[in-house]
Image (cartoon, helix red, strand yellow):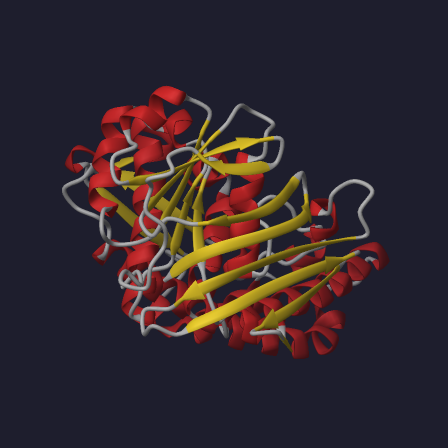
Length: 380
């Protein structure tokens, strides 16, 4: 998968059009000039959403009524598509080859993954960060999972409203049972789907973790159900039904749901030790990136092509030795965009790269001899 060009109008401080290199693209510029904004624009064009905000209207330039991002994608099968997103207020309008399309149809046209400071929250943050990473990873390959998650969130919201009211009214569980039973019935079915999808995906992630890079560190990911130790997880539906019945009074006392996959966790271990607690900063960064690379490989297996990879301020998170290992691993596989504020980084890794200077929201090719995107490398 290749992004051959991108044209931006009034997206944050960005404007103008650039032709992209087919392999490694280095975006060099001082802080505040628009490097991360350009990566965000590429991500928005290829996924339909921002990696920096859930309020897409925040990305529209100050004083502008709308923003537009356009670009051309070449898929592994040689198919070319012109994509465009127009942001007006809180709305996003999607176009493929000039024709208005639904968000679901649009996001099937391209995809990108991003590594930035926030990615490290997979390791350093709370369980919700790891659950969100896992769910987004599954949705990137199996978009239908998005609806399962949305349905589950709706059921939890409705159930929590009942539990909160029961807590306020001082009602015991026996009186709430008939009201909450339909929501628990839906919760059981959806929770089983989520548990099964997450468990299988984590198994596949472990199988596809990159080996032989980052000094050969041995990483293992384990999906930990909140019901672990409570019974047979192979009979998840029966187990969660029993726990929901048993814990109803406790849920009323708490005023919210205590049982379900929204309380599950990802355990990330390095050489048998919990990485969050015992891993060095370098090991934590390498682990987060290795997990992302595993997801990229799973994407390739499912879609028969690689996505686009965005690396924001990579040298702020990895030393040059690990960066060299990473870029060597990625070489010839997929199109990469890397932002940096350090000229020394650009000088060291410029071999085979297209280099752009970002200044006041404009990208200018620094080396006129750099290669531009071509159809002979479709990212497969």
